[in-house]
Image (tube, rainbow, N blue to C red; front, side, top):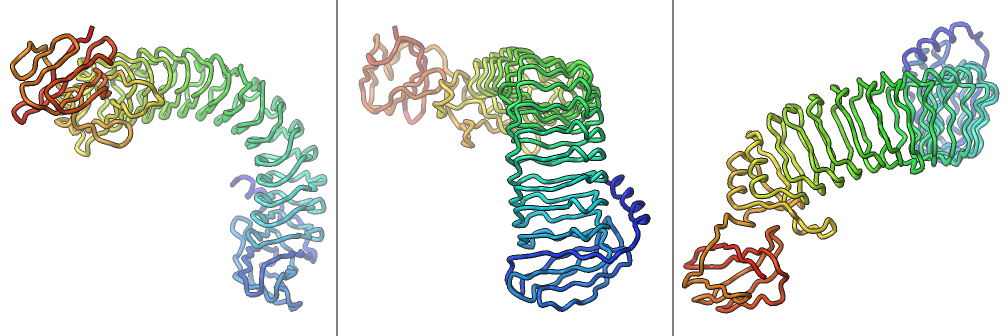
Length: 508
């Protein structure tokens, strides 16, 4: 942008001074603020705010920062007229319904964003370089043959087509959120940034745009995307293209920000993407992910995949990781000193540790398969942060995710608290007591088990839970019949002499 503005200043010096007039029609009421910013060749301008009277104002000749004029509409629905050698005009958020700038031949910057325009004709503004007309209701944008145009932001309108055949110097294009179904940028060989997301394009040809640095084409209904001629890409967002299966990134040595969430991409070869800092590849068809060559990676989202293993030990810069809802049986993060948060819920992990993760403060690992021993080793591996940490590893309340298979004990809860970690259920509720430390216990006078019948010496409050902590039955009394429960291992908790006891029971 700075290079563009510097070029503008040079061009402005070469344009002969001629009287210009710009007319703005607004639906604003009388007394409403007219927020104009203007730069002219002689730093002066005449303005009629709607009552037919022109007043002269001092402005500046600074294209980088035109002078702001806090005016007021002198009538309802005013027709505002501007006379002068205008280089730059900012008339955003003024309830404008029409702009006539055909006489403004020196105009290089026009910012009319966030108005009520339904059409805009800038075909006579041959020196126009920067055009901001986004967030209007424009269905017809006439660019003519604007050979000097370097930036167009026309997103958030009702455009059905955009003719860029003459925009050979275009550097930046933002045209997303329109009704455009076909986009030809083959003549825009200087293009470095394009944001065309949420256009139902079906196809996008960027083979002629060899200088592209940023490409955002999310939700464009693309089934293919050839990026072989775009080695300079730093940012690539192609998410929400549900039919996109193949993407070649072999020459993307400058890529730092890549998002392919919600696609059908089956393989990601990131071997040469050594500068990658942010990777979002959730909800794809990948079954493996090798990140050994991404030492600068700080953010990773790779959930809702079919990954079975994920080794992140080479990614020392990692700060946040999402790897939930996959098929992971192995996830390695030991030694990641910058990692602050990781979510790996809904996988098949039986073991998980965080040794050397000194900055780790948040872990979501519920709905996995950690045994009490594995849970204890996880807690043992955690740092002891002064400000505390949150460990969400046991959630029997989330029925949508199925049964909770992680196993924790009261001793593990105490072990975590001793290290300033709070174990939560994943729903912001602290787990204070669940499966307690239990030993195999013979029948006693207090509690005797015979088959599927339990007998207490005294009337007692009792609960029966699975080893995952899900309550199956509870009540109060001296006798309990468990004939309705399935065969398996359960935990019986009951009161005895004002103390809570837990013992294992096996139902055959």
